[in-house]
Image (cartoon, rainbow, N blue to C red; front, side):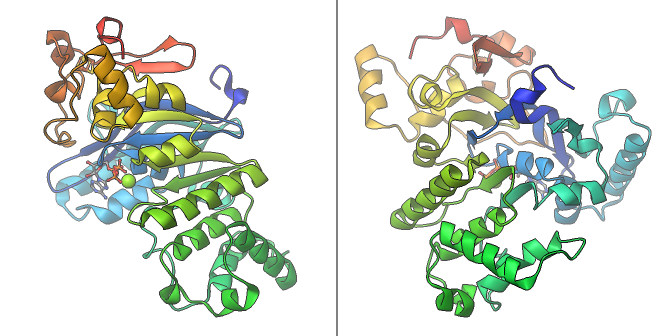
Length: 374
Ligand SMILES: Nc1ncnc2c1ncn2[C@@H]1O[C@H](COP(=O)(O)OP(=O)(O)OP(=O)(O)O)[C@@H](O)[C@H]1O
Ligand code: SF4
Ligand SMILES: [Mg+2]
């Protein structure tokens, strides 16, 4: 067990996750470490393709299933790599041990004294959807449009009721409780409504309800408000914050929406190219960011306060030029170097150390101490 482990409900250590694809391995998560303390909300924040959802899938134990299903696993080379992954796992070996990069997940995810990555599927299933639940990115696919929501919400309860101890009445009581938490209509509406009849945002609230019915230790919400109009976003944010308070939830919130981060996250991990670039309390990240990537990312959509401060200090800061790196072939050294206005030779040649520069403030940058103050 790592040091201070009991301070954390969940502790991710040196997590790596790679997909197979027609173009080779996609190194989606590279050496990611962070912890979530009891009752807090940690945000994963960063550009598209940074690896945020992949971290969530790894914590839920469904990364490899998704990777095999979604990519060219029928391809001969990819098939060989997945077989090698199975073999290495059985022998307790990592990519480094066998000298070849492998698809799938490596590292440690500590939860209640156990490494989730060492569990078998049966053991994992008891935790997933039960103690650690998930509101997935992109809602429409997840709900059955033709079954009423009360039934769908109850399904997750029954799915985990291995000993068949739950009476129908108890299931109904708990379904109604969580639907109330997310403020979904009155009982007749709940019974009748099918997702295809929902207004925008109602389906998302039902998904949140479904994720809450087990009274989880940890709720993972992936882009809960993307693609919704501003009014609906507000209502969903309110629903999330309300249940957080009532249930004293521990949360991992994934989004590239600055407003949602500011309202809901206690601490924020900023991701790019499968790495955490910076990790600190929300105020530091959003108001006094230290990492060149965080600064540039925030500048793509700056707050008024930030614009004022930048003018005052005479800083020249732009949004991020160019596009995110190709993760089948990530840049050498610091993966942000092709787009970083502060890069030096060392940034191209050496991978920075992920280090704690102040209490609870982590940075992945060679030049942090030399950067202009923000
Ligand atoms: N099933 C898959 N097969 C192959 N590559 C994938 C698959 N899913 C994601 N990727 C790639 O893995 C990398 C990380 O993707 P991920 O979805 O984790 O990013 P994200 O930060 O969640 O992005 P977004 O903000 O767009 O949701 C990207 O390069 C992406 O193209
Ligand atoms: S390590 Fe170098 S390239 Fe990377 S963010 Fe820091 S200054 Fe920029
Ligand atoms: Mg995602």
